[in-house]
Image (tube, rainbow, N blue to C red; front, top):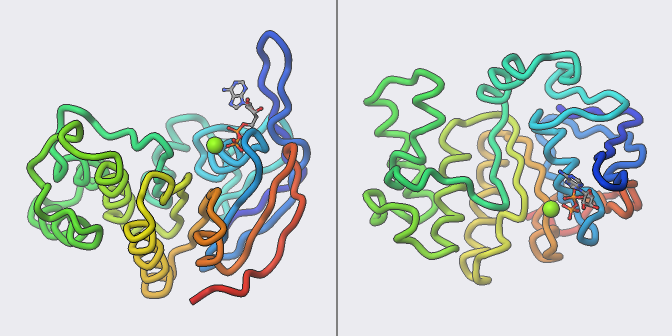
Length: 228
Ligand SMILES: Nc1ncnc2c1ncn2[C@@H]1O[C@H](COP(=O)(O)OP(=O)(O)O)[C@@H](O)[C@H]1O
Ligand SMILES: [Mg+2]
């Protein structure tokens, strides 16, 4: 599903920053993987490359058999829409749209019929426990609720690859636990490949494999005992 070869990413600015310093790894279809590492170790940068939101400075990134570095922004965006869903650290909800409209957005972009949209949005909101908030605006919700809207929006498309940046970061432990359970169910029932950046060892233990980053390099990569 994901294959990186000798990938580096540097940011130019006042001084050059090396975010990724040579990463080679493969994530197979149907894996559920946690990525951990100290702040600044390159986790978000790596996830953005997986998601085609950014391109590497050097090296190759293959996502679902496609070399995204060779594609222009428009092609990458079309590809993303059908194959990848993304739970952002900062939610990125549209402030003027109601919760249900935010969740429906990727389906509208994909040209899904309105009856089908209503059905899938209702199910996704039920999955994250937010049926009663469908007609609210994002700024009427708590941080944790907004996070759940972002999760519903990511689940609604049924994309085969789900990328999540700290999906339980703003949730209390009970809610966090529910979301982890939900992600595992999606993973098991739909075979969705899930890559999740997290600071939380408990969240990582819900995954089957843990990749640790340090200073833009893979420091560790192995099976997790916990996968339930
Ligand atoms: N747009 C950017 N411009 C310049 N430096 C960046 C940018 N994004 C990330 N960085 C730097 O790259 C490094 C890795 O960042 P990031 O991938 O966000 O780490 P993490 O998610 O592990 O905290 C950090 O040193 C960060 O400051
Ligand atoms: Mg980050």
